[in-house]
Image (spheres, rainbow, N blue to C red):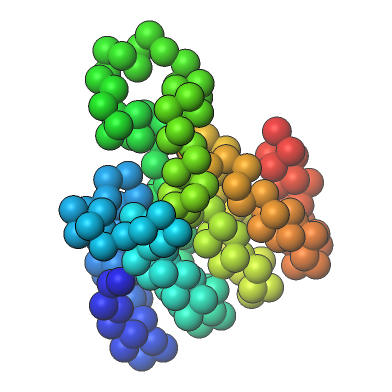
Length: 195
């Protein structure tokens, strides 16, 4: 688990310090290739990415979902970096041994399922949309001028990367919350989520 410097994420931290600490944490998280240490120290129930997931849960619960964080200008940038940690099909297939040339000749989705890679995505939690959606559950987020743009970015990335659908419960819960349902752009957001 990452050593989070909470003092750099608190209310006394400047926006620059806050974003630098978020970046430092997220840059160490790789949901594609497990480290040798993770492979040696893991069992199937914990998964190879367990420490990363614990870090992301803690970061989401203590920081990214907080009103103080949401009121910071760089909050949206942090959320976008968080969703961008979710690997693409290409990332996972290349990590499992496929070459660029192989990918031109195969159905990526079929290869993910046939190779058991999607089982790992689900079992080892190799996606981050749920953390993003949980951060949007604080009603304060709907007051941000970039609320719609940021949420639509997360929804779009969630639908395009691996694990699409694994966070649907979180998205549906979010879309049924009053601060989202009453937002001026609700219909646009809902339409994107339904597509």
